[in-house]
Image (cartoon, rainbow, N blue to C red; front, side):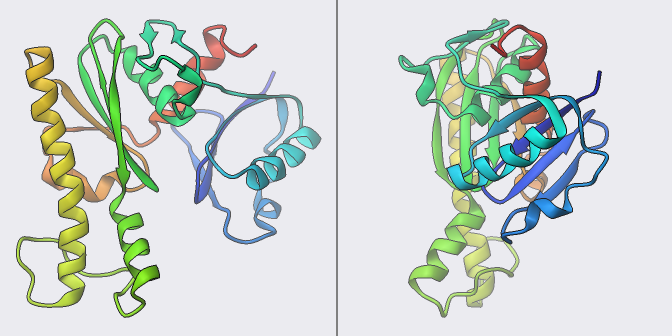
Length: 238
């Protein structure tokens, strides 16, 4: 029996049979799924998706040709040790849910920060209770938004720092600094709430750029896929 994991985000698809070898496909082009290798097929495809319905349906159509079963993860009020804070759990993004599910297996208080299109922050207790979270634009989305409204502001480039002497560096410093400030404020609030500092865990495509500012952080770039694997194995796939 061959199983594959698929995490369809807003800009790319991650897919893997195991978390030691994760592959990526950007989906900006209409024919992006033509690049999915022939060896990606088997018994079951486990899928997490926060992408548009168009991207989701395109992926589903291809997977149905390659797998006997395709199962999309969905958020539930509880899974394993995890207990979600939302009164309406279905309103919590499945990517946040799966990251929390993976993190809950460690049985320690954690502040989980996802850096993708959005910047998400979630607080988890040692016994698996989700205490809520925050959502903000990621540094890359801040840059995109500024460029959309003011085309003279470059979409990328520049060096982060404190006070820049040119526009490119100022953009990088400002957008990155906003993200860093949110994370640091959230760490302080979490420590006050729990009575102890939580472990900081960063994941997602934009996490690596922020890591130098948090030398004590845990970097788990494939946390959503790890949660998807856990979801598939703990009886929540119905």
